[in-house]
Length: 376
Image (cartoon, rainbow, N blue to C red; front, side, top):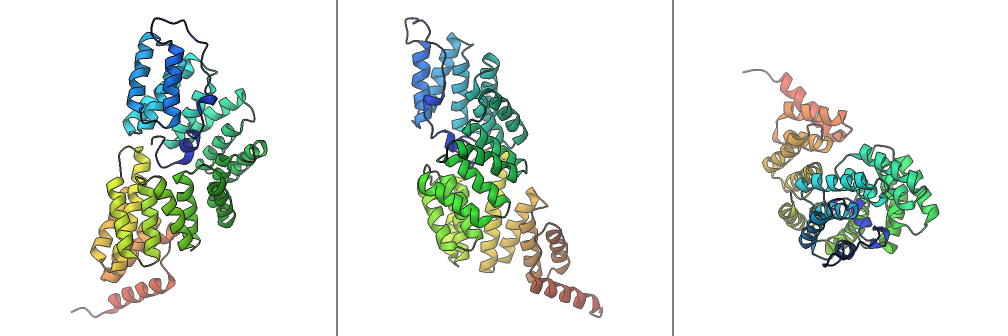
């Protein structure tokens, strides 16, 4: 996914200024603006959030036509491709960062953004390798420690993630990115109340990023604090109305309050906001979340056929989706399709999402009644 997509990895980084990017010594003026001055202007545009990405790409390609060995130009071109965010351009962004590093192996900023990109693409092991190499150059740097912690969380090591982010916070107690990643790791460990406190601190004092409010709102929802969840998610939605993942969570919050019309409206908006700009694995996960929520709203409205169709779309993408197996089992039970209900209920239980005891008992009774019914 691009820098504006559904992970906080790049969002925090782009709050930073160009002060962290080191450029080579100014080059001699060739009659045009110097290479260095041109790169500086492009860098300011990219890091300030100015909507000039396509212009920046054209300028960087022109610079590289003059000086193809400019590591800084390759680095900024990687940033620009990442901001466009299409799945096709993620490979181009990766290649530009790698080219910058091949030209200047000590270009630690390029290594950092390459690690971000690997994380966004679901390649956490590669991200960890890049960050380990970077920390040899900048030992104890809080930004690199925090991102390494997030890579460890993606690799299934949330406790290690907390340890690394705590190291970053010891260097800079106000470092919101490390506190955010700590909160996510706490959620992974089931320490929800602690995580909520960390995320609340980030929301109160950190940069106003939609990812923060999405994570906080989701945690509130899991804790049953629906009104607080709605407040957090609506804040995130105001920051970035195009975020489909926030609208899907808003739909869940409205459904939890029985506001099904509002939930369906959010799902329609989420469906129209869905975009192939996201990396494929992230887009597929978001689609699964969307269809799951559509199924739950339809089930709550009693539209069982529509609910089943939505859950099937989730299972077409991942047969081991626990919630989808659990809820389609309930739909089949209500439709009288007891053998199908049992198959999905069994799979759901194996995945850690068993039917409630009352529904399990009802299903067993229906199956037993079917087996003992005299044949005509």
